Image (cartoon, rainbow, N blue to C red; front, side):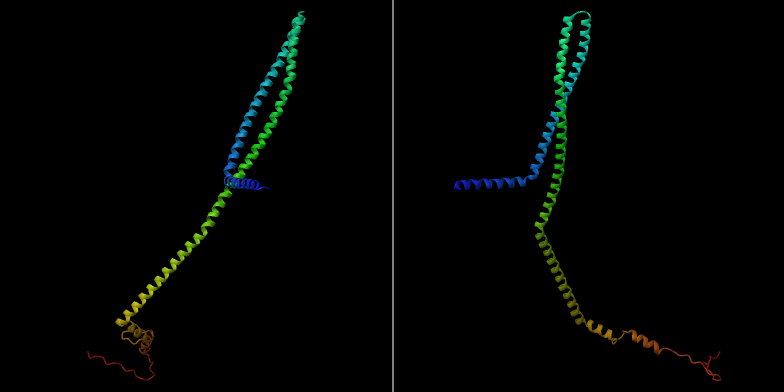
Length: 248
């Protein structure tokens, strides 16, 4: 293969790939347009069917008229023969022959029209079903396309989302650390203030029960025990001293 042929093949291949990429990128738009084209073709087919039906009905009406004319002319021919007017009877008979010839020609034509109508109706119904099936499949493809587009967007943004979440977590951790440092500063400041005023030492003395005015639970219990008075029951014959009464 010459260099020119190779370059030509390369150009055609590149053009094909580029064209295929454009087709793939606009596949749904192309499908929609093809559906519209098919609908338009179906409309044209229905119009053709309607025209065919109209012509067949006109032919049937005309054929019926031929039969009615034949019946009328047969009666007229008999009347002419009865009157001995053979030339007139022969003329009428010629007209009847022409009408019968027309009927013989039009009959098969009408039958052919009916067969064509049946084929067209079947083709139109089949195509309508195919178009409707294709339209439903296109709707499903569109939904899948939307879902996949959303999934792709989520996948592309997931790295950024994780980064933002990690940044927020880092910020939260720094806030917690700053609050812990502030709490520790406040606690140390309170300890220094208590040491300056002696409040810390007073608290320790109160806890040990040494500081005056402080009574622990054990102190209260001991006091109650010491103040307990036992009542002694006197023995028989033993006098119980009675306190002197004040003189009246």
